[in-house]
Length: 142
Image (cartoon, rainbow, N blue to C red; front, side, top):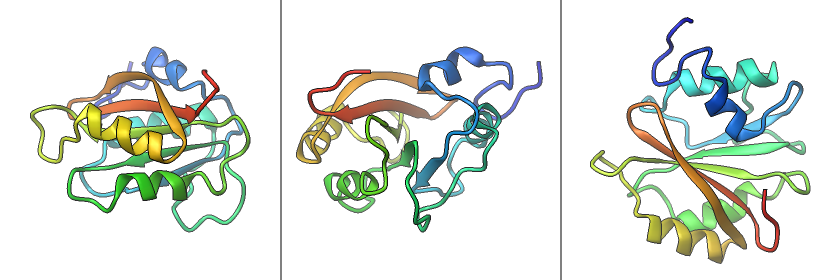
């Protein structure tokens, strides 16, 4: 099993939690040099598609958002990322873990999600530095 930064290429459990299947188009917001490249690679391997960036102009099947304390307003960003999201698709919010620079408190995540019409359904650790939180439209659970 080849090891990538943060995630192993055979870590099907982590990727399975995202519910990814081949052919899905996943849009990415907030990419920077601190993002977990192994996690990104694993998403692309699971979908067979490259991640599309913030400027993509077509409907997407899911969104990953890298967000750090001090970035722009999280609630506004979460509203924006939903504009091209296909019905029933979810947002995966990736924030630095507790103790890592840029950590966002769960309370702040919950408040921003609520303002954006989303709610949290699950969270788990990604690699060495990130926490993934699944956000779905209110009234729907995954």
